[in-house]
Length: 417
Ligand SMILES: [Fe+2]
Image (cartoon, rainbow, N blue to C red; front, side, top):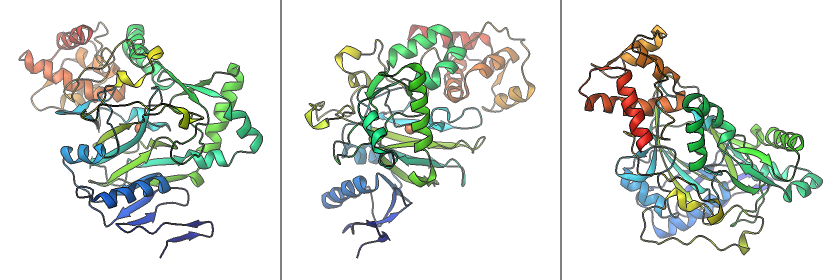
């Protein structure tokens, strides 16, 4: 039998698992399945369910990193090291840890993953390792439904438009403040903006969606600044509403996988100071977002590769000037972004509460007030990762009190690296 969801919606009955709709718009909980032991037949069906529901949720799927990568690899080519740190030994797994000293940052605005690259992520497979009870949910918004709900004249207009996707829209200010002009320039060299149609066509389903996002949709190339701002504001306001959305609460060993070609998502930062630990594999889209994807020659990858570097996800005319090397959680995201000594000396006054807080992060290690003042200036979303580098450097210098010299040493390594 089919799950009868509404008069307009009759859902597929799957042979290998159950698909329980998670909202009226999109999403399904997939039950009676073991992702570590998936037959080819079940995998084929899972692909069908993925296209039907756009975001799939799986509870109680404990996985090792190895198994996460193996499952992801069945869907395509993983993206290599990028702006998010990776799991040691697994350059294709992005490690996202947030605690009282760092914050979710990038994910609080609606977005699709990596639209600031020419070849964004086709799909993301996110695994929860530690979750704050009840908090830190994620919302996904069906941007095809949002497109469908537009009137025909507006559809006709946006069909011909293109939007620049730029990290600067959300991160420009924090990076400029935290890392100065040089840090900002480096970020832009690593992550040049990409231009995509406002309403690209999904290569597998043929459906159109609203593609610009609140996080990276900067301006529409064919319009004046005022028109562009007005249209983007309207499209966002029109799209992000509960009728087009599904919200899911994470538990340890929950996995969500979603289609970045037609959805946007955002994390909800209501859990600080609790600890939240997630790991994500991003599968590369071999096609750029396009009005006519059927006419495009897909990127071809050497199938023996474990992942493809981010620098290869740009067209030749839009290559980044700098590439990402291998990074681990002990290293840091964007060089130069993280540690600024800001010319503090070790006696610079600092907010006592903050000082106490970072003094308690690692047993037996304290900060001078000046070092604490500098750490406080690191944007929240980079702070947790920056601290890892700082602790590492202190250890290398044999110091149990972190002073400005430790920060300067970390900074110098950044500049050199
Ligand atoms: Fe994301």
